[in-house]
Image (cartoon, rainbow, N blue to C red; front, side):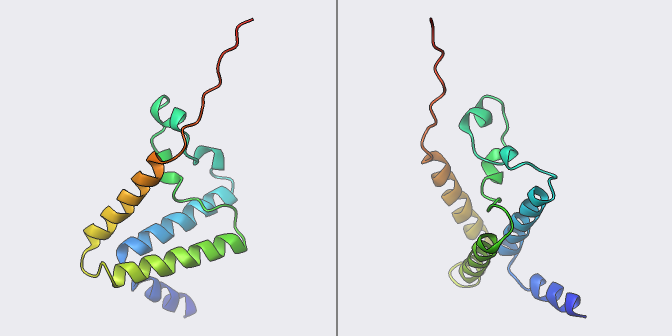
Length: 123
């Protein structure tokens, strides 16, 4: 009975917030269950552009660290503020909300300090 109420409440959440929250929880659960390694999720420009591991452009926004209070509060804030934005400022404009998400992600990704590759030393 309580599970049905929880599922009904979750289905009332706007679509983008519901999808992003579910993706974050599932990604963190997969890492916690050791189905994924956090080393396969983090953003590394060398691996993205030279090894073509393009999933790293998305997965670095889905993993919030190991399960614990920190994860719980991060998810609470993400869920609450995404829902407030999607139901308030972006009501009826789901595409605009998705564009804002993508635009913010692109800006954060390109502002990432460029990692220096190790230089080969010659004797």
